[in-house]
Length: 529
Image (tube, rainbow, N blue to C red; front, side, top):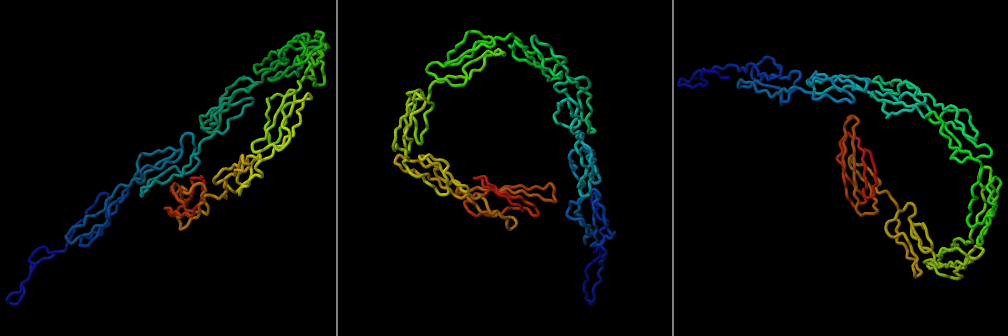
């Protein structure tokens, strides 16, 4: 570098060059600059072309464009572009069912301690996370398992009032079952933080009603057992009968016998049983052995095997197997292809007229029947014939029901209705008005679903009810090596084509589940990639 003197030489008249007085000294840039939070790697040379390398101190990282400064010919060091910024790991990771002990420091070397929340206990793993130089927290392997006490203890002769919870602090209340009473002890059990139930001290004793009370004019039938639910049966002695509501008493949960409603009274039969449309022959006595005779009124006939009733030792008249029925022909008979015209009367002399149903005509015979004194309808010889002949047959269909006037068709298995009516009707002209039902073969709305070129779909469409179909394509991606990675998207496509193709923007190295739904019919086909 020229520092002083004359830097030129002149050729003189004497043919000689004048001496130049220039003095050159070597360039020296001096000490290099020292940016904050850095340390230098430098060989102490400050000549032109010398280099110094900068490295960020521990806990800092370079966010600038470079880390080198060079000594220039001007004698100055180039301004270094290194910028050291403090490294921070941010908030530590959240681990399920744990709490953190942390001083809010996120610089390298900072630590976070994890411990299980109340109601959980440590099952295994490390409970420390450390902030490293890359600005990332290490993942702790601590696993906390919820404390469960399981099912509460069973106490003899008790039931439980429990909401099903087995975590610490949960409680179970015990009560004595029906037939037992609370004799002593506490009736509560608690789930502890150690994972077990406290033992309740409740004691339940069985109820005992003692000897049942006597009932006047009766005898007891009892097996000498007096626990809850035990029963004693009372029966009136000979010559008496029960006029109360019942003849038994039960030992109740309160330890007392329920009052027996038995009331024994001397036997006397009430008035004889009334039978409709009968007359009675009776002397008016109601003692045991008294007899009543029954016979039907005029205009009725007798049915049954026995027409007498005797007053029994139970204070009741015997059942009479007798009833009197009015002569009736019952409902008129049903004849094929006819409609009866009838006023609902079935007495002798009643008349029913028959007419042919729609689609049929009277071919021959009589169409009137009369109820006779024997209780039977007279014979009818009416014969109705269909007007339209054999029922019509439709392609790929079968007959569900017909009465020769109306025929209901449906598609056979493997086919479905496309358009038209499913009913054929015999018209007044004697010709069938045939159904217009069209049956076509059933095929899945989406078939031959394939994946090609790694990210494109191809399928075949079968459309029935609409010329245009709208398809919804749903694809969901996951990665085995990235636990929390999840990619879910949808595409919609409207088309009239029979063969369709659609390319998706699938991410590389990702497992996808793809579903294609035909929205008109709600059919879905799936594939995996």
